[in-house]
Amino acid sequence: MMGNARFLISENDYKAFEKAEPLEPYLFYLSFIDTDDIPTLEKALNDCDAIAFSLDRSTLQFTYILEMVIAGILLVVSIALIIIAVVILRFTISFTLSEEYRQIGIMKAIGIPNRKIRSLYLVKYLAISVLGAIIGLTLSFPFGSTLLKMVSQNIVMENSNSLLLGVLCAAAVVCTIVLFCYLSTRKVKKFTPVDAVRSGTTGERYKKKGVIKLGKKPVRPVFFMAVNDILSSPKRFLIMLFTFFVGISMLMVGLNISSTMTSGKMLGWINMAQCDAALVESGSIEKYMVADGREKLNQKISEIESDLSEKGWEADCFVEVITTVIVTKGDTKLKTNGVEGINMTPDEYMYLEGTAPQNKNEIAMSYIVADKLGAQIGDTVTVKTPDGETECMITAVYQTMMSLGNNIRMYPGQTYSFQNLVGLNDLQIRFNDDPSTGEIEKRIEAIKEMYPDDKVMNAGDYVDYCVGGVGGMMDGVTGLLLPVIILIDILVAVLMEKSFLTKERGEIAMLKAIGFKNRSIILWQILRIAIVMIAAVLFSVALADPIGKLTTGGIFQMMGAKNIIFDMDVLKTFVIYPAVILAATVFSVFLTALLIRKVNSNEINSVE
Image 1: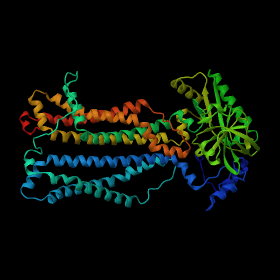
Image 2: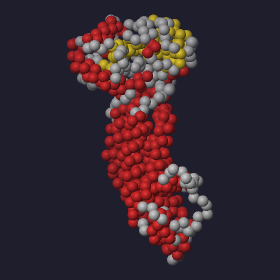
Image 3: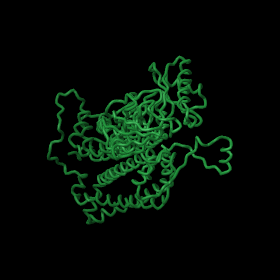
Image 4: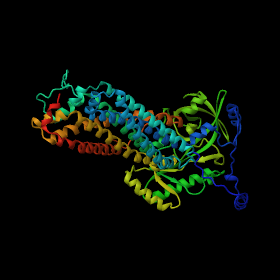
């Protein structure tokens, strides 16, 4: 993940460091090569033993792919918000036309043509959209800077040409709104003065309303009426269902990614063994990258296990080391990373197919490396390390996001002198008594006191540390997304409720005339929208995993993760957040439905 810290120093400072301590164990060079023939260059580099890693420009860009995941999610959310905004605009125009049905009919009756009537609405929405675009453009700069900070903690990014792009986007929004308004006001042509006098209703209905019967079912009439309205007029509620579904689904995708990125289970995605805690040792790992490095590392592992044992905690400590190897199959030669687990066995890892290597002449291979070599389980390849060559059989295929999936797993002890390592992972700790989560946290606090100079964290925090804090960034995105979705859902629900109150004024009057009280009628109005929102939540829950894989699975697959299983925070994703959205929306509908108290039973003349 290119996680090395970098400092620029002067030549004199460099010479001072060199005099104080030999720099040879720490020294390496970065060479940048400009060529149009990458395959030939890669073939030549495979013959160079002293190269720790090499990659082309397009691959290097994937170093920041997890930051781009955040940016991609924000883009998807933005597109979803645009779709929702268009839906809200349709509601607004339809509601306005319904409220002003009588005025439109009167204008037609006195001879004003359709074109003039429609132009009144076009001018009004043009003015509103221009004002909204100016406000939105002004607020976009601080808002955009906030979003940019979320995805630029590990990458230098510049917001160039933002003013010009913002003006063009604002102009596009204005044009879209005006065009949509023009199309939505076509129904003005169908209005007649006679219908306007009757408040937009002809007074007749030529088909039966409802697909279910109350009969002797043990159901309260109010609930029956709400369900019957939804089933008998599904088109009125499908748009609202779609709006709720899109918003809640986007929120769930963000929550699932956040919980997955901070879950210890993701260790399997990067092909690391499961652990309870990780210890990031202070100082330089290069102290192990020497001829006797294996002995030093084994001694460090023994010290940690001994210190934990003194506390009464029996635990295993292990770590992975990495070197550059060349794998050859037939005429195909590939330089990749060879990973060896120290103080552990290969069967502690996850594999897609096959069985773990059981001796020095067996290896496991990532599916990306296997595809590049055209190899499969049972094939024999030549593995060349800086210390020699070995004929090895492939016994398993696995997935990993480490080094974008470019590595093989070697049997412990098979490898090379530690002097030829190109890297080490951090020390991992697994307790043997299967402690609870709370107990693990207590032990981690104690380990921090034992090693005050080192970083000690649980498995979930360690995963987030490895991927650059993406989980924390996703928490910020979902925190920003929640109020936006709540406001959108409230706006859609309130607009729908106000349109219902306008169209159903006569029906409400009739219900009052036959004895229904205000609270029952208000409950009827609330139940319809509540049922639709609950249905949207259920659909979102059912489709959360496939939607997550569809929106972000391709990115993780490019990183090397073929089989993605999201680790969902059930309480937060399926209970707390949906409940907050549902409560806020239903309460807003309740406040709107209080207007029912102003409807009198003598308004029954407008009923069907």
